[in-house]
Image 1 (cartoon, rainbow, N blue to C red):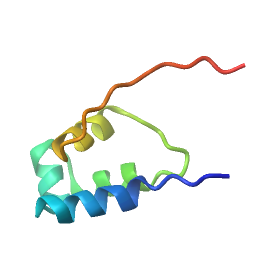
Image 2 (image 1 turned 90 degrees about the horizontal axis):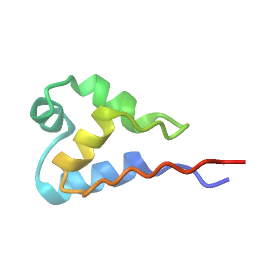
Image 3 (image 1 turned 30 degrees about the horizontal axis):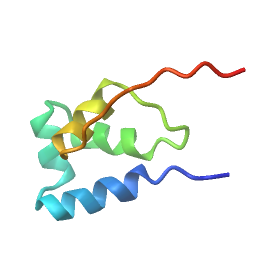
Image 4 (image 1 turned 90 degrees about the vertical axis):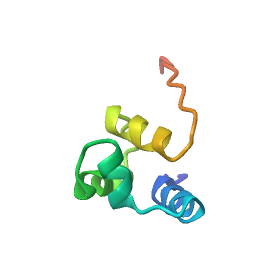
Length: 69
């Protein structure tokens, strides 16, 4: 099973950008604790806050719906 490395990716991108998760939370008008909960979800849930957070870090997010059998 492949684990989600979003938390690591976000921390690396924050270091590269010279920003903190708290600053990202402020930029997208939410709380730091909510940002932390979003990136630590093991089931890889993608929601609006996740998309905003990743875009604030400079990622270009495109959501694609895939129907599973």
